[in-house]
Amino acid sequence: MEALEALGIDPVHYLIMPRVIGMALGVFSLTVYLIIGALASGWGFAFLQDVPLTPGDYFKQIVESLNWLDFALLALKTIAFGFFIAIVTCYHGLAQPLRLEEVSRVAVRAVTQGVVVCVLIDTVFIVLYLVT
Image 1 (cartoon, helix red, strand yellow):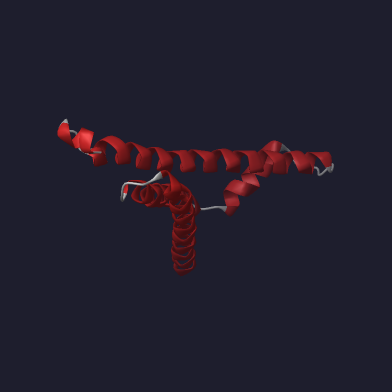
Image 2: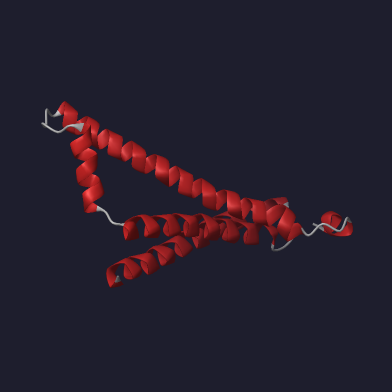
């Protein structure tokens, strides 16, 4: 950190921002892949059970049951998860110089606070979804 500052490079922009943006986009991308996989496996299971349902009818029923708010809240929620997980972990990793013995303790604290933040974000989005 001190070496970056001595070179005139802002450590926040150089170290933290790429991680925060990457984590937010990564969590969003993984969520999209998970949803695609769940939808495909749902149709596959229906096909294996000999349910008379074409793929077009299956996806038509799914599209009719969802609205734009479902997609908007899903995108915001997953991006918020990635953003705040990255912020919490960067804070704990860069808040103070660490000795080798402290790394595991700080990692556990970062994971614990990350889980708490995710539960709080989830609660906010559940309330937001129920209100609208």
